[in-house]
Image 1: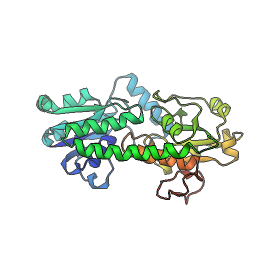
Image 2 (image 1 turned 180 degrees about the horizontal axis):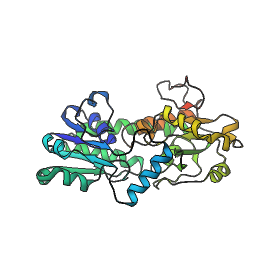
Image 3 (image 1 turned 120 degrees about the horizontal axis):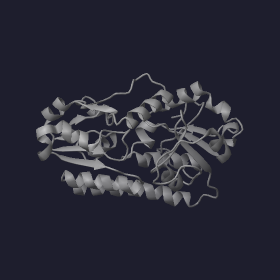
Length: 308
C-alpha cells in the first residue's frame, strides 16, 4: 500500500503500526519518527516563518475570514506518488489541509484513492483512530496490540493518582498572543493525571481568554504548551511578551510553579504520544506517586534550562 500522510499524528500512527516503509509522502509538519523526514513533502505553509505569535494569529484570522488556505498542496507531486491511502484531519482548519483540497489535488486519482480524515476530540478517539487506520491497512491485530499497550499505560496512571490526597488546580495555555486556554483532549488529560483544569473544557474548542480571567483563576500550576511550538519557542514568547510580569500576583508565578511542554510534539498532536503527555502531567502533578517511574518524561519548569 502506498500511503501519504498529511497529518503528523496520523504519520505517527502509521509508524506505530509498523508501516513507515509504506509511506511515500508526508506533510511539511511531519517530523516523527526521524526515519520519515527524508520523504517527499506534499504540502507547505503559507504563513511567514519569522512571524510573531500575534502576527500568526492575525494572519490566520484574516485567511479564515477570506476563506483562503493556510497550506498549499503540490498537486503534481501528490499525483506522481499514486497513493492508495491519504490521511488527514477534519478537526481544525488551522492544523492540516482539508479533504476537499486533497480531492481536488488528486485530480484523476481521486476516485481510486481512499481518504481518511481523523477528527479526535478526546483520548479514546485517538485510540479509535489507531483502530481505523489499522483496519484500513490490514494491520488490525497489530493495531490491537498497540492500543492495548497504550490503554495499559493510561490505566497505570489512573490507578496511581487514586492514591493522591490533593489534586492541584491547573490552567494550561495553548497560545500566548492572544491567550488561548486548552481544549479538546487536554483538559481530559489533566483530569486523568490527577489535576483540575480551571478554564479549559473537555471536548470543547480552545478559546481566547483575558489576562484578567487568567489572574482570577489563580491555579496552583500554570502550564504552557503552545500549538505547533517547541519548548524553546514558547519560552521565547513568554519572555518577549513580558506576560509573567502581568501575572505577578498569581500563586503559580510567586511560587515558581510554571511548566513548559512541547506543544508541537506532544500536547497538540493527537497521536500515540498523547499517552506520553499524560505521563508528563501525572509525574508533574504528583511527583512522589511516580518517583518509582523514572522512565516517565517530565515537563520543564520555566527558568530551569536543565530540565528534560
